[in-house]
Amino acid sequence: GEDVEQSLFLSVREGDSSVINCTYTDSSSTYLYWYKQEPGAGLQLLTYIFSNMDMKQDQRLTVLLNKKDKHLSLRIADTQTGDSAIYFCAESYGGATNKLIFGTGTLLAVQP
Amino acid sequence: NAGVTQTPKFRVLKTGQSMTLLCAQDMNHEYMYWYRQDPGMGLRLIHYSVGEGTTAKGEVPDGYNVSRLKKQNFLLGLESAAPSQTSVYFCASSYSSSYNEQFFGPGTRLTVL
Image 1: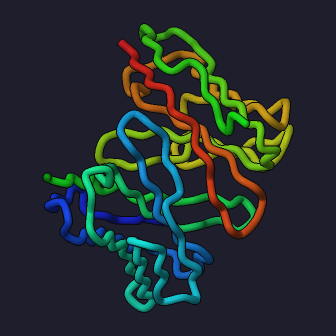
Image 2: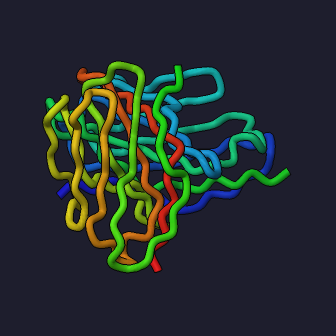
């Protein structure tokens, strides 16, 4: 079955770079996503990458996709305390049903 | 434009009681979803709907029922609550396209004693 894996916790110092990793299973996924969940809130889409791309950069965010290894990463440059949150990667699944399979989430703690 | 709203925000039930969670969206989205979030397990899909009048089972449907009588509303029912259903429940909606940005509600925290 489908399984999207992430490490559970990452701690960094303010100003450092953060790298959150994810492995996914469905090589036919068209899009892969990173969602952010702040405390007590729902998830919000942070960024996404189309499956025929290797890299996407969006301000402080860099997404890298290695399709051969089914590995996705999110790099946050100059990490700020406001970046503290849970980050979920997700892969699309199921064609017309538009279902997403979410990873377990990585809690990013930014130390001042 | 309120986006996705959920009611109630919090609820405490006793084992065996029933309740309905309401999700509403004002973005004219075709697709709607119910997830539960448990520590260390990410989000798991309970049920989803690809349009008004349609529903389908997700990954963990047992103990839940859903209805989509109106396009903007998606209801999640617990007929006989169990402690294992203690969780945070999220509703989401999206357009029907291959690019599937899902818009999430703020969540409902349910405790079953």
